Image (cartoon, rainbow, N blue to C red; front, side, top):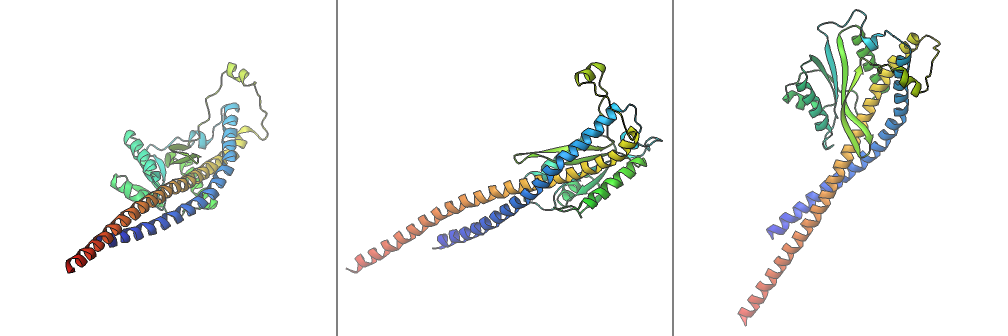
Length: 294
């Protein structure tokens, strides 16, 4: 009797886990649909602005802008690289945080450059502390639905510090969203913005030899477009990270729900066998007792 009661208790616990993970899967699916819509809707604009800036910088000749080449007086010798590591505020999202944090720490170990670490999300704090990485700034106000004003404010602070020579570069460690079935941890260089190498004559002819006439001048155009590019690129990194987190949690909760269903079926079979054995034992005892009285 004790064994069947124990199995019954385990069945109840597994059933509760199944309901919780199923609910979390449905919530993650709903959030994923909204986050994917935002990320995919903004991506064409982000890629278009970045491509336009690259094309202008490549065809406008020698353009001197602090967001491309750094401050006019040169970078400070003591300036460090700034790394922004994006993690989630909540767990239960499979390998999402581990993949981003392992990429960040592995790259840090391979490079000897001095750096300043900033962290987004709660889940990376203990990992980086255990790895001996000092976090200068911990951003806890972004959450699952960061406001664009907060992202723009962060981008503006990075641009101001870079132009002032306080930092030599800005790199973003995040999970890049490619599709619902593929997300890749990536390190993106946000600053300085590097234009592509200038094409030679043959390549220009192959591309059609397009010649641009700038109005207003190319320097003024880039002065307006470069800050927009930095802000939109950082916002796209946040969007990709959020939608990737929802995908990872959706997949993890589906796997947990499926495992709970399989365990529930297995426990039901064990319970039925234990109950059948108990009934058989009781019948045997009754029949044996009746035979002994005859």
